[in-house]
Figure 1 (tube, rainbow, N blue to C red):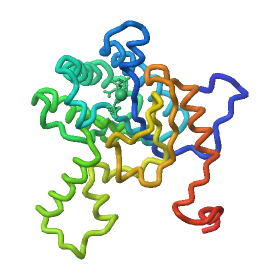
Figure 2: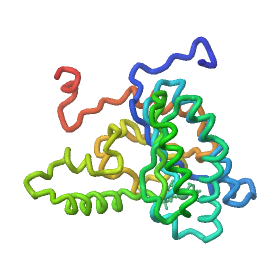
Figure 3: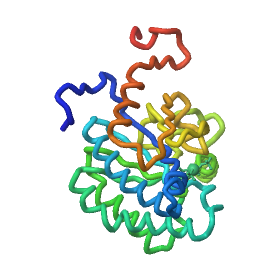
Figure 4: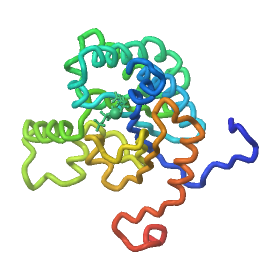
Length: 245
Ligand code: IPE
Ligand code: IPE
Ligand code: MG
């Protein structure tokens, strides 16, 4: 439901939105709270953003939750982030499933305890036929690690040099089943990709906002969608060429 009768959704809604959920630590610090309180607030916000994505008709949402580089944070923070992952599955899976959300994971689950890996796999299996929104969680994900993994798999499968093209590489990435993101959002104002979907975002549009992730709500998502709707995606061609072809 829209909040106001006058509110109009933009014409072009991206099929796939990917979000670098950044700024939890600074959000907490600004309130004199520990960093983990920021991460917990970030999870609460994620619920709102998922609901808004469903409302706006976005089909794929990919969220960057833990990077391959985030292991270098203090042990207690890493442990806290792992606990949050487990808590979210325990507390939210039922409702996500009832709301038609299909869960996917990209990255490497191997460093997690077997019981937690099992929970993630169960969540993916349970929700595999849901169609309302595909929610892909990038956890222990890095774009470079993903490409290395793809090359290793191609070699293991005996792929020959002549068979390798962009389409085949795409099929060896963790994201083989998803379209490339149309729009990448980064909160907290950082102007960098931080190893997120580096192959897949080659022609994505970007929306960067100074808002810290726990404060990035429905209204600002709508703002990002309006912004996106004004863009002309040219994919290297001349203006107007896409709609004519
Ligand atoms: C993003 O918030 C969440 C993760 C990287 C897990 P940060 O924890 O990076 O927050 P800042 O950037 O320190 O404010
Ligand atoms: C990117 O944020 C990773 C996630 C949001 C999970 P970081 O806070 O880790 O990125 P840098 O260190 O500022 O580049
Ligand atoms: Mg950060």
